[in-house]
Length: 572
Image (tube, rainbow, N blue to C red):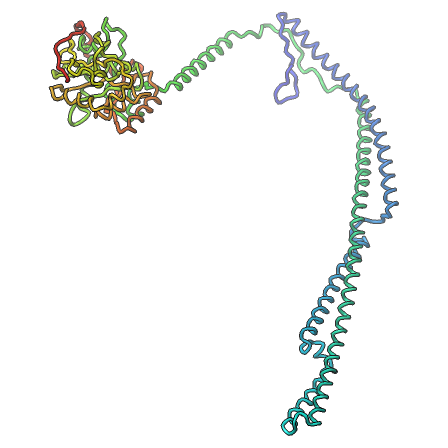
C-alpha cells in the first residue's frame, strides 16, 4: 500500500502467482481498511468525549479555586486599584520628588548667601541691602573725614581727636554687630531649609518603600489574576471541544471509499526482462566508465609523449619503443648493434641526432644518463647511446658510475673485481681499467666492487681527472651510466662534474610527482638536464616508433655479443 504522489489516494498492490487470488486480496484489504477506519473514528470520538468531560470538570474546579484566592488576596492587602494613572501613592511620590528638588534649591541658595556673608561681608547682597548698615557706614565715613581734616590742625592726643576715634570705633562695632545679625538670620534660614529638605527626603524614601511594596503586591496579584484568566480560557476551550465531539460522535459516515476496484489481470507485470536487461547493460557501462576514469585519475604517470614538454618544461629528445623479445641478448641495447635497421636502433639513433642538435656545439662529449628510480631503462639507454655514438667511427667510453647497483658488467658478462670504485679508491692504479668489447670503437669501465660510501669517492678529484685523461687519449664521447636521483646524492655529485645530463623516464610507469621531485633536486643543485628520453612506449603512448612499418625497417642480421678482453690503456 502506497500513497499516490500529490493526491489523497492510496494504491494497493498485491504480488501473487494466482491473478484471481491477488485481486480478491486487494479488494478485501480495501474493505477491511474502510471498516477499521470507521471503528477507529467512533472509538476515538467516544474516548475523546469522556476524556474532555473529565478535564472540563477538573478545569472548572481549578477556575473556581483561583478566583476565590484572587478575591481573598485583594481583600487582605486592601488593593483597590493598581492603575499607575490613578494610584495615590504614585502621585504622592511625584509631588514629594518635586518638593525635594525645590527644598534642595532653597538650601543651596541659603548656603551660598551664608558663605558669601561669612567670607566677604562688605560685598554681600544682604549687607548691601541693609539700611542700618548703610547708615552706620555713612556716619563712619563722615567721622573719618572730620578726623582727617582735624588731624591737620590738632594732634592725635587732643581731646577732640580722641573723641572722634571713639565714635568711629563705636560705629565699627555697630556695623560688625549688624553684619553678625544678618549672618545669624541667614544661618537660621539655612538650618530651616536643611530640616525641611531632610523631612521631605525621609517622606520621599518612605513613599518609595510603599511603592516598592505595592509593586510586590501587584506582582502577586497579577500572578493570581493570570492564573484565573488561563483557567477561564482553558475551561471555555474544553467546553467548546466537548460540544464539537458530541456533534461529531453522532455522525457515522466514513471519509474513505474505493475508487477503482481490483480486477483480475490478463498478463503478469513482473519480471520485465527487457527492462532488467537494459538496466543491467546501462549499469555495467556506467560502472566500467567509472572504473576507467578512476584508474586514469589515480595514474599520474607520463602517458603521452607531448606531456613531457608541457609538464616538465624539458625537450623530448627520444621516444624508445617497448620491445619484448631480446633474441637471447643480455640487453635490448645490443639490438642497436646486432639489428641496426630495427626500430629500436633507429629510435636511439634519433635520440643521438637530437643530442647533436641540442646545442650549437653539437653532441656533448661527456654525457650523464640518470633517471628517477631503478628499472626505467637508464642503463639500456646509456649502452644503446654509447653503441650509437661508436657507430659514427669515433672512440667511445661507457662508464658505470652506479656503484650501488652496477649493471654494465652484467650486460657484457664480465667480472667486476676491479673497476671505477677501485680506481677512485686508489687501489692498484697500474691495473688496466678500460676493457675492450666486441662492439667496434666501444670501451667499457665497470663499476667495480661496491664501496662503503660511493658518494665520497665521486666527490674526490680522481673522477674528474679520469674524464680529462680519457678525452686526452682520444675518446670523442664518454657516456656515464649514473645512479637514479631520488633517495641518493650520487647523481647530484656527478651532475655538478658533468655538464650534460640526459634524463630517462619510463612511459605509463614513473609517477609525474616523482619526476618533478627529482628534477627539483637537480635544479636546486644547479643542474638542468639537456632533455628527456621516454622509454618503453607503446601505441597507447605515441605512434612515433611505427616508422619501421613505413620504411620497411626491422630486417637485419644479428651478431653475437660477448666479452672480449683486449689490451687497453692503463690509467695510472
